[in-house]
Image 1 (cartoon, helix red, strand yellow):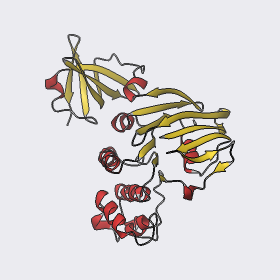
Image 2: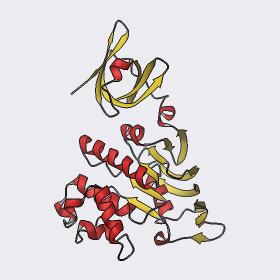
Image 3: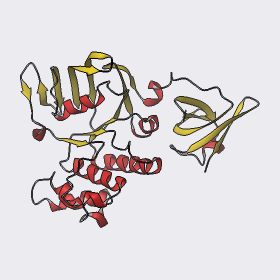
Image 4: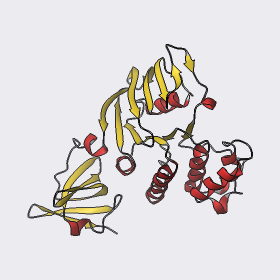
Length: 290
């Protein structure tokens, strides 16, 4: 269990705000933090990692105190079992793929490096330098290096935001597979609703430094504006069974459309698919787009 109860004053575009976050994250849970820029999302990750100190509060991971302002405990980042993946990958440019991964391991732990190279699909790239890799390949190396120390919690600061949609979906699937294999708790900062629905079991919406909403993505965003257009195109966020029908949540621009679908309509659908929703005599038709 990861217990977080922290406070810190932050400067935002609207002036100074007090960031407050109090919650617990279970072992192996995948959680997302959603909110506007400047709300404090990245600061929360940095406080957990020990890169920024809260002004007050505590952070306890698996019964071990990482930070406690009252007890004057503040473990260094090196003493916290944390993996951190940044937007810009932060790989060492002069090191090979293998050396980047081994840097995060204890010496002579070649077997762990071999396993991570295999799990992240880097077998044919281990001698390459970061400059010789594509964005998706560099991100795989960043994931492997972050997972090398067997972290209690994996912190992801919008790691897929610079990638195109196809590569982003591919790496989302790989990230889920890695998390299920290695079982760290994951805390992901994301602005992408599709990503939030696809990856997380729970999400926190941060507004002005405070938790405005929390819960399953389908619950948190159920109050979003529902489009009443007769013809819309969007991406499937979730497919949920509801009695004899299925409820699709589809992201259309900034709105979430919720529509009932039959078994036949969802047979060929998957989360992330692009669909056309059109009305016919007030009954919506759902058509997958190639």
